Length: 500
Image (cartoon, rainbow, N blue to C red):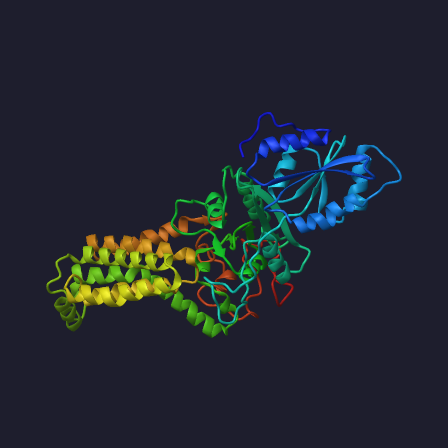
């Protein structure tokens, strides 16, 4: 709906003028319902307006219209007094408030609410009657766990709030609501634990949200790009999760969360690089088991970005490092291959990405068939035809599978991009290029920030209390304090209350 420069600041005094104005604004195709009635023993004209497709007509009939038509008033007052009487004595809806501006009328009608106009009244009544199609709380699809909670966020912001409140039923759990997007009017909630979270970080998040100036925010991904540090970086400076237990755990550490309407994900920040390798199972398993699995994820990430480049540098520039028998096998496997190793590796890695995207976008059974066909039939065919070597198929498969062991989906694509970069460096400079690439990557990661937090914190800069939950998870009796950056004023979590 285009803004109307002639839009009145206040509502009209007569019902007919208000209804005519709304009819002119909305037109015919939006299913606008405008009803005129005379209530209080046929002494008072009123107008009821709502959109048929997004308002609960049964609620309107039972709690608004029937009480109005059956009402009577022995004491006749002015129009504003009657409005208060209707609000407090007649309508039984749980959400009802007075509005005085036409912009509020338009916004509430588009939200699915009902607006009641009273003849000669300076204000109108907004009655909450929105009909929302909700899906039930289901198990997480992208972040499944063995021992963790089996609840995930939904598309309804109220349900998502309730899932967080259920896990943190404390009065210092704070919610602050914003509306972003001039057209989408997306409702978002900034959530934090007062007294635990760093106030400077919360103020920074609030100011970035208030600075959003765009027409449409349709999900957490768009919101994240608009408020994160250095959005051109391939590394995520926030965590996107569908799990309420992940969101609440991070809130207790001093971070903030953002949820928005029409999105089944939560935005969590600030996060360091290491949080991309943590899962809820880490905190349900024994420390030794969870530490082992976390190390496996770090190794998998390393394999996903480096194993192809190391193979290329060994067979192209640094053959002396490879054992003679292995070098002979690789050389025999490459007999008749028409492409140089670097081009062969890049093409096959890109082909694997195409297969993954095709399988992901297809319906479930068709996607499984596409993946199986590509992996078994096409893979065997191109090796038999001599277009690529068998050893290269193994390397690319290990690299691709390793990327799926990373616990967060937001780190999956950065790992694939880094894989291409290291392949090119290895193809041009061999092992020297790989080492220089690693040095540059470490420098780049150390220069990033997430809402003021250094990206490699608590390793760089070093925080001895925070390091206990980076590569391994220490016992709960050892993790007694929160990270200094996240919670500078309330660091004690458990154990000795005298810890500062």
